[in-house]
Length: 481
Image 1 (cartoon, rainbow, N blue to C red):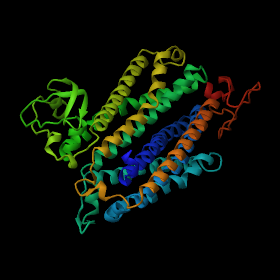
Image 2: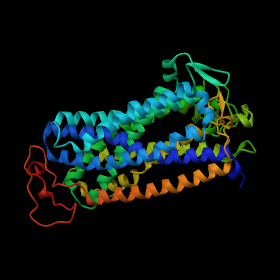
Image 3: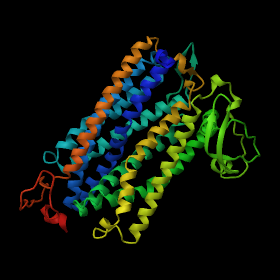
Image 4: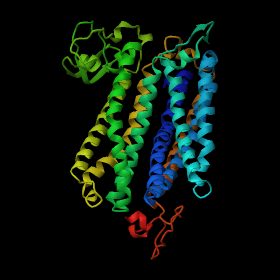
């Protein structure tokens, strides 16, 4: 296998591995952080102990995600120095600053107040605790802002120019607010929030199917559904706006996303391939299922295009993405999941309006609950496939049309990279197994209704129970009402 002796390919594989696995955990910390702000706000407003117990329960999963996210994220960033040193040296004037902002503005803010959020319930004033929760959520989401700023700048470099092999910044604000940045940040923010909402809803649906704490978890299910009403459709629209940016600024990526080999000139209508089998050598699709005249409606909401859609044949093979099939199907996977989650949300709202999601009837909606459990991991798949489209579709450039990937990799022996890739693979798999074990244990045990509620006297269980097994009437009296 030739790729085992190719330093660039192995370095790309290593970064893809660490990025795709690491992405699983910040996704939840950013989204669940916002959910915790909502839940604790409801607790302070209503003093309903159910919301307090929700905050304590979901914060356990937040802490687990934060810990594993840190463990997987630091090695990923170190690769800019170990595997991609020429790239870091060339763009460090801007790229290094932005990555530093993510560490100092976002990670440090989140880490500084995380301890108060997790352990300060009975040690600090409720207002201070709530402020800590808000700051943790802000810190988590600032990471999204800075990471997507850096990534967007790699897609549409702005604010400076290459001088003697190095990028010289003339305008930091222009570089930060590069063309891809606004919609990319919003798209990723909505993706993390939507994924978190369906994870929360899916876990709640599991409890409801098991008939455990039904009244309690019906609250978290309905809150997740209510938030998804706004997030799921908006995410589809923002995703379309991102595609328009690709259409405008990265035509070869759009051609790869659509397996479009031949150029469609302005003023013509164009078919859209629903499924296809791209053949890179023959520069055509071996087979495809097309929808006539649909591409114009997708890109411009009209049949005939006002701008040409360039085909892959417009570029030399070395100047266009090579893994066309990967880009093509990852894009369709992401889009399909987005529409599935939106459809599930609309069906759930229909059931809600019919009164079938009340505490008395929600346990009867078994297929709907199974649908939410099935949807729980789909957001992670959509995010990873979206990042594959974003990064693989940018090839062969690291900094778009400025620095090639082959010139960005460190000059180290392929055997060294293969050894580190193997080590990362084993380590990340072990971390994933540990996360699944401890996460499932938190879920199996369920919320601890024996925790003291600030300002409220808690009734003690009348019978002995296993850890995490509590009957509904063992909660505070206020929570049963």
